Amino acid sequence: MLKLHLADFSLEHFLEHYWQQKPVVIRQGFQHFKDLISPDELAGLACESQVESRLVYKTDGQWQAEIGPFESYERLGERDWSLIVQAVNHWSPEVAALVEPFSFIPKWRLDDVMISYATPGGGVGPHIDLYDVFICQGSGRRNWRVGDRGEHRQFAAHPALLHTDPFEAIIDVELLPGDIFYIPPGYPHDGITLEHSMSFSVGFRAKSARDMLSGLADHLIDNELGSALICDPRRPVHRQQGRIDASDFARIKAHLQAILDDDNLIADFAGCYLSKTKCLLDLQELQDPFDEAELAGLLAHDSLVRIGGLRCFYVDATLADGVCYIEGERFEFGAACRDAVIALCDNEVLPPALLKAGLQQPAFVAALTQWVNCGYWYFQD
Figure 1: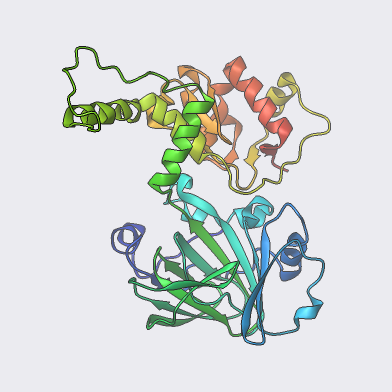
Figure 2: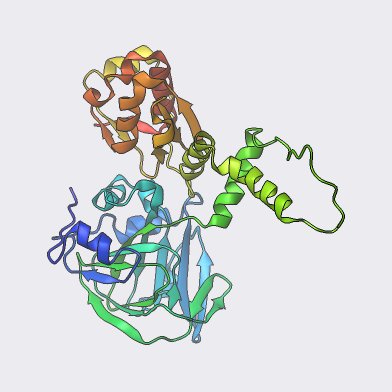
């Protein structure tokens, strides 16, 4: 089991002084760290159409990028290229285990685990990310330079590569196996591989107001909500036809604010919106599905394991009604299932005891049976 080792400060100190504030190197954050997937296995994943991947390299000094799937890599040689694969935690249980050491950040902020294999001289160029990332060095060595936040010009070095101008480094460091480099959003950085190496990046992405408002509009439309019209009885005579006056402006704001002030509505939106996965899941639908009695019998002594990348949440505002949100859908099981919902969403592995209350409720058992049959959870070997 992977365990985060902090020799120089506590998690509380990290969150107070570094999280979203400044980069920091955590030496031997994972002691005796070994690659969670081999380069050959990673290359094999990048051959699959369901998996997001890309190759980055240079030709005659010009940056190039290709989007997978890939058939072979022989043409690339032994230097100066990188293979990047997204959401490997969706496809490998061993890689999915890398998320747990960072559970001091809530999973609704998690993006994915991206893995890079690079040959000597390989990298993706100087760039700025809009998300927090913990870069965990696997085999090999990589040199990282990080600049300070500021006004950095960005440009397209290639249609698939957004780079930034050269920057003065505030950190220039070589990462060894087991080292972790935390970089917040907005800091320009550039990694160059010194020898064949693997990097495991655990990314945490926030949502912009623009994206959330767009998602909220979709939620209102899909659920036929927010259709009440602005109402303005007994209004005074209006003498300037082109004017939206202060009272009308306040009325418009209040109409919109009423949506945001509806805690149940926003809870359902947030739960559904944030539980949708960005990348495909490795769903293995059962050929011989369980019925509810069979599932309940197995749960008397066997544990369930959540597949990598599955997002399931509860929101305080609706938890009392036993509501949870899984893969963009809302499920309500009633107050008796409150503890079972918490256990379902908080734990990667579900021993039978944690689900005891829920297994007394037919609706919960029916939903759990459906989830297991479609591959969201599976029984531990």
